[in-house]
Length: 119
Image 1 (cartoon, one colour):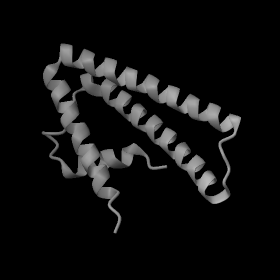
Image 2 (tube, rainbow, N blue to C red):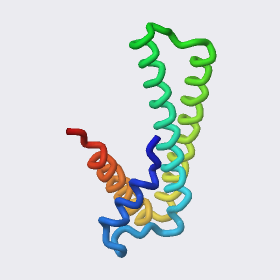
Image 3 (cartoon, rainbow, N blue to C red):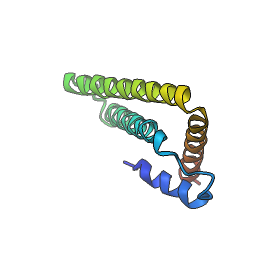
């Protein structure tokens, strides 16, 4: 599974230090974003495993598989709420830091999409 820190390094390497330095105040929201992204990847990766089992072996998900999928989704939902709460608090207290955070996230997503291009 790809680590989001790889994307962060790509953003840092391509961005000027003055325009993409996140304030310390943004750290909780940034960490929440990384956790949310990680739980999303774990959930999607497990869905892919289940789909491959079905395609290759005609095996439906077991009860354990279904429970694991529910746990992964619940954890992702929890991380989405943490991210939402932390970004709303950041926006209320430091609107400029909030704007910078989302610009930074957009650059990270863009860098990730460029790294995932397949030919």
